[in-house]
Length: 220
Image (tube, rainbow, N blue to C red; front, top):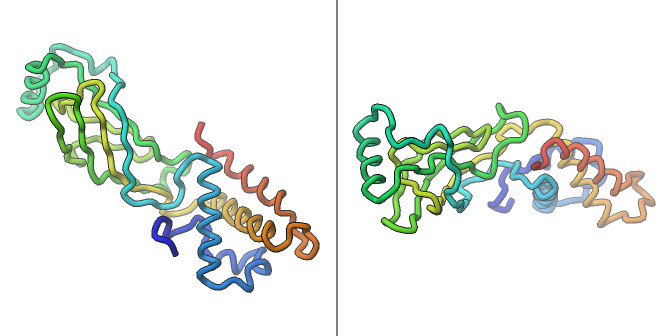
């Protein structure tokens, strides 16, 4: 199994024991594993989301969103580290810092089946150097992808935020599993039986069934 997706949405064992077992009975284990990985990636392409578990992908974003509730020249009492950060921001000419960003990958539904964690956050500022932010000092919400910096973290507008994180459905919803199974069956039929002459399955109909299921997961 290739390293980029060790856990496809539908396993080879499920494919071999399901309604489409006849289509894959002559596949070698490695060929079947590769097929299920291809089906998973097609499901992800159709939804514009990562669905299967992924590890340590890197995203680069531009800090540009200010929360009106966070814009203040005179914040309330702060712990020493926050006060130092705020004082540093003032000394560099700004106190209206960006405190929020959103990672791209988060669950469209069944949030309880999704697991997410941040490995590292690096701030590349246009001036005053760079900074590595300790991930557990941020508020990260895996179900929405929202992250909030602690008050006093120096993130002026225009800062490049480089975040490395992991996520995905560690428990695959059954409808996603079925969509991936339909997609895999469609792939096989397109290759082995494009005329639909012997297996009694319509590859285009199977693909459409998969896409209909995936509609609920498609990025809006």
